[in-house]
Image 1: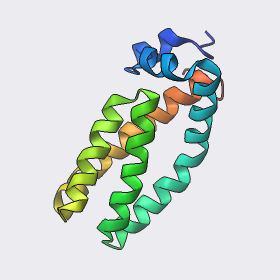
Image 2 (image 1 turned 90 degrees about the horizontal axis):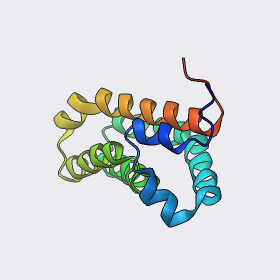
Image 3 (image 1 turned 90 degrees about the vertical axis):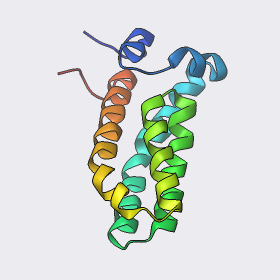
Length: 125
């Protein structure tokens, strides 16, 4: 089945699509989501690099950016996790970040997969 631009597919996958689509309209939502998907690997690389260098200031900046974008795109769980990572980075809690980093990466991967299916860039396996 093709889920390209299917709102129900987003809803079933935990996306607060109504709020986002009502705010932007579908064309703008698709445009912003496409930019998010295209830019995420660069952000992930920068996040990972800053974490590997124990640079929590930069790490907080990168997760903050993802938090904002994911929030207005309707990815509530990702917004919640990135906020938590941002706050922990600001308070220099490196242990929390390292212990919860894989869960954050898993949620980012899930959001990207859902996004790509919605955008018609991938098929549901």
